[in-house]
Length: 297
Image (cartoon, rainbow, N blue to C red; front, side, top):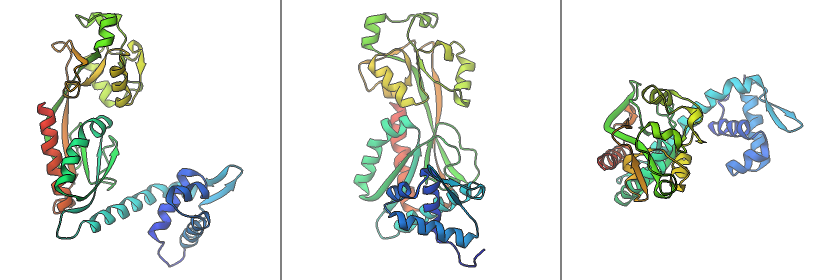
């Protein structure tokens, strides 16, 4: 292996080539020329003393060494991005980039007005939003702050519980006008239901409490909460939606509230190393304030 330390940018290029499968596609994604991408890969191979890619008829194929290095390169890229965010935040005013992660529904339906108010108070802030529910985003420095529907378990995080968001059964008035309003849980068997596709820990927990909500009973299946919400709004059928969110739309009707209710704990968390960061502190506080108001309805 060469004694020279590889440039961090080479790792970012390496990851882009891994994901896109070609030098030209990686160049388009990164805003670089194909020769520059090729030079980055060659320089990284020399520095590491490894062959990372083999040319094939349909592009570049990663070697076993490249696949083994991928998680480490991902960590380097995330750390590099975090370093740039911290560096950009220093100055007299609250400024710099804050990278947030939250679920689809929270990201699209709840956070925009909260972040708009935050930006008005601190125009030097820039927001990066990642729609994800992965538990390890913060420890890997892929995000600064996370909004999660479960209690973060990692010791290295600062977390605050905000309360519980209630989920309920909802349908559009057009659907109910055409098919009637169910008066009981048993009556749902005669209706068009919207729900999950693949089971996960959250779905299995819900099924323990509501076993009738099986995959076989669903006429519309999607693992995207946004897709399910869109189907409810379109009048496709009856689905599960956050009660506070549905209350904003007079066309959505909350069904069987006394017989179906599911609560999701809501937390805001960030890495403990960011306690002293002004950009993260004001963003954390804004999220706590805005989400508390949303939960209270």
